[in-house]
Image: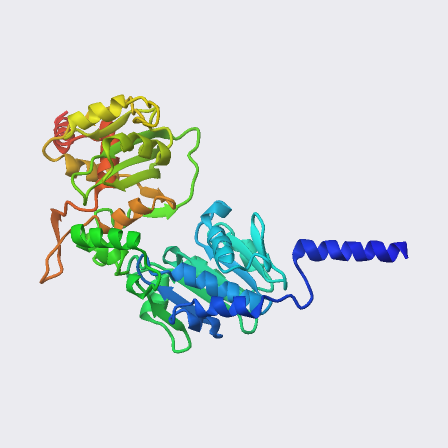
Amino acid sequence: MGQRNSLGALLAAIEDEFRLKAGATVAPEVLAAAIKGLAPWAKPLLEPRRYKCLFGGRGSAKSFSAADAILILGCQRRIRVLCAREFQNSIADSIHFLLKQRISDLELEDFYKVLDTEIRGANGTEFIFKGLRRNVTSIKSMAGLTHVWVEEAEAISQGSWDVLTPTVRNPGSEIWVVFNPAQETDCIYQRFAINGEPGDYVREVNWRDNPHFTKELEDERSRMQRTDPDRYAHIWEGKIIKHSKAQIFSGKWVVDTFEPGQDWAGPYYGADWGFGENDPTAAVRCWIYDRKLWIDAESCKYQLELDEIGRAWAAAVPGIERHVVRADSARPDTIRYVKKGRKAQGTDNGAVPIPLLEGVKKGAGSIADGIEHIRSYEQIVIHERCKDMQSEAMMYQRKVDPLSGDVLDEIIDKHNHLWDSLRYALQPLIRPRRERTQRAHVRANW
């Protein structure tokens, strides 16, 4: 009898730990409310399809809707879901928090147990979180997957996609992709937006398709539409970046995750000031190693007050308050103020000082010299978390002839605030073209 009671207690403990309750269900009215809350374009996510794709611009609620749909399916039957993205250094980089938030909003806390690195349902449903780039072997060996949800799928490489698709092989298994379009050549954009197959569910959704679009989002959207139409079309309307050959740094930059080593040169810090509501105040941190330029921290914010600049930089760009920061010299008064900062008094938070901030001398040809220097590195590696740097890398371009399509030599002075910051950071290393020419002439006449 004692052994039987002990076994019963053990089974009860296992049930409680793994939430495996026989016949565990969600109250019908709770599930019905969750389904009713889905936008019309999200309801087909509940229907069986091998491939499901949502793509479009910011504010469309793509990820929220996918989260709601997959949680509903997990209540209706036992599923095993791999929540993936190209890069994931920690659980904080994943959609774990989004699912946790939606579980609460949909009143599903009694059904789902949110753990530190996974989420479990009372019926055995399981959510696992991994990055594809660094976990190829473990993903290949995963068994029992019924669903894969790939978030920020615009960053997925062809190699990762080729590994993923045959891994999800159970009968009735599904692959969901959610992304904001980036470049026309991206493999996921080509696979679904351009070459979608009849059996796929592919839907473009944008801000106007979101029934819960907030006033705060509308203010942000309308400001960008008014001040920066090109960036607006990409960010909010989900339009791809064309003319990749016109990109200033075309073919030079990649996105990856990394940690600077002890033997890396740097860090180097640079900053650029915002002029008006359509220009952000920017700062960047970079390193040099193995003939490559590594960018691992950024701050890019609009309409910052002077007192907010130092605090914003210190929060986003580690160490900036302890190192030399080279900035655009066009604002000497701003440099003096941000450099000195201001002490907090009572409820006044003051201004965080950047004591080693200094202006960079600029002259004729300095932009071209800086660009040439940056392109001289074998590769420019942008950390995955530096989203604004990636966006500018795509949009910082030379002018394109509207009739012939030829890429011209003229540089468009837009979408370059972080790249200008990078030029300033590297200023001591940049040799002007005239100096290089003079030295070459001297060597030629030795």
